[in-house]
Image (cartoon, rainbow over all chains, first blue to last red; front, side):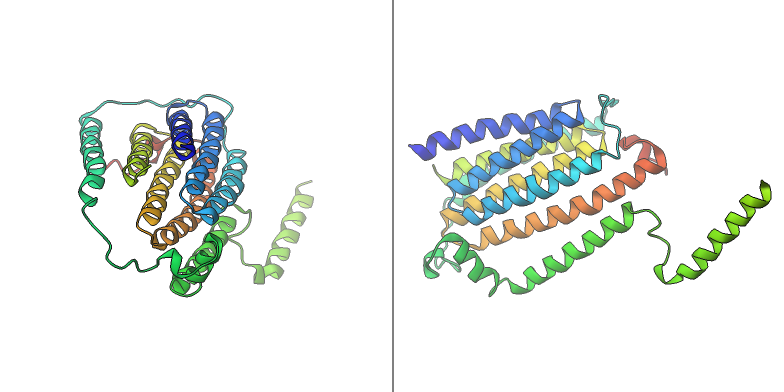
Length: 195
Length: 99
């Protein structure tokens, strides 16, 4: 009973929040609605006994990703409404038809897969004991250790890329600081000469 | 609550994100829509993970979250760079080659 009520409540709220994101003209409203939708999605993870995933969803999405968007939007002009010239062409209608077909396939897929049965679950949570975060930890550091390390390297690469792209003077080499100082002094002399 | 309920919900959210990707011309809104798409997939993975008693789905959801975080870091950096250069993040201004 509780699960049913919670499921439908979270469904309605999530769908309405994401609809605001997609159809809103103001970028700030869209971002706030997206943050709310991310928190509401973590409710589904708690309903599905994926406690650790729900906590990670709140921390990573609303803590890191939305904060990054908020700081990124300081660089962009978001005070005025977004003007978009939406053109209706044959490509758009083709994409609508393709997405409608995708909906039909995606909704009918569970009906077909109901006949599929997994004979021996590879990673049954009951095999590991303990709570959900403990099970996740055991699997993450045994079977999925290499993907975990690769994800760590990927995040490091993304962090360096983000810093280099946005930071000022990042395309200058740090080891060439001496020549950089010389350039500065020469420029200063030029300015004095002009005066 | 059955698996079908959760999968239908994930489909609806995915379609909302897909409408956003098709409809919006602003690059920032396009990034928001891709976040919706990734989250819809995450719900599907978590639901399958529970109803088939297999933790693999949750693992894949974790890696999707990692991919989404790095995508945002790099994508937002490129977006800010493009805005500084051109003063607009409309998708139509990206058409330089007129292919």
